[in-house]
Image 1 (cartoon, helix red, strand yellow):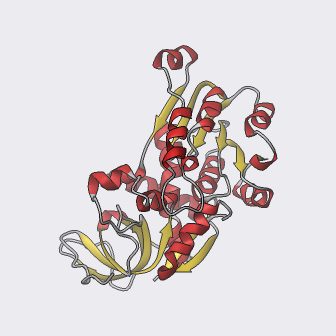
Image 2 (tube, one colour; image 1 turned 180 degrees about the vertical axis):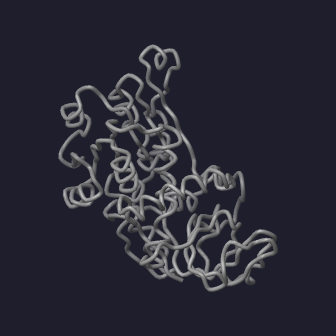
Image 3 (cartoon, rainbow, N blue to C red; image 1 turned 180 degrees about the horizontal axis):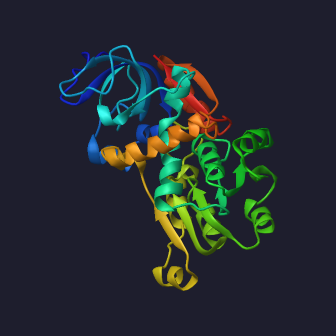
Length: 326
């Protein structure tokens, strides 16, 4: 699709896009299942939550960057493009030595992990954290952030080939879900229960995660990837219905009695919160400079092969992040 070049409005920056991060939320957007897409944009819609590139032009009042400067940032949809205009508060300077692909792969997963662990949990040293999909984008970032905060991490992965990536991120123990029910292994490893469980799978794993919370523990939900059928262009409504029925309903009386909590969020609703973005990115980039947080491993695809990139993501075989290159 050809559109006219964007014109930056007041406070916006026109970016020539060099790389685009691919997230599982993009798959949900494509299938018409992403609620905030309906709330903010509607259809037709251009997916994409994160980009990197160079500053092409500045709108009135935008003065934090220079033309030609390498930047990366987040966008509430519209990232699958060769050019984009973004509010200045949603852009940040690319760390020294990073490629455009690394920069594009960083913000969405890192902000998701940061918000879960720092904003919602106030993670403390010594906390016991369970991270599902610890070799993926958010899982890898969450593992590194938890370790940087002094926490102990148990990670789960979907296959043996992903074990090493989770360990490199800092997981003390790694559970291979393909070898049997993860909840049995995690209960043996941490018999006292977890202070935090991060879950984007949904349905049955939420019940097991909640049951393994220690007193005062929190289950953080940020997605329902397990409800989607792998390798399909459209959702399986039978699978969605079954997953919905299997998803636990948390009783506030029971939660109060056992001193456990359940929190959920959608990062795309937070992009206009310049204060949260600034606080989060200041801490994240501080960990980057200290060598405690690295960009995820990336695999690149040409933008015109976005269908192939989505298929690779849905396969569940990838490690780290997929990135589109215009």
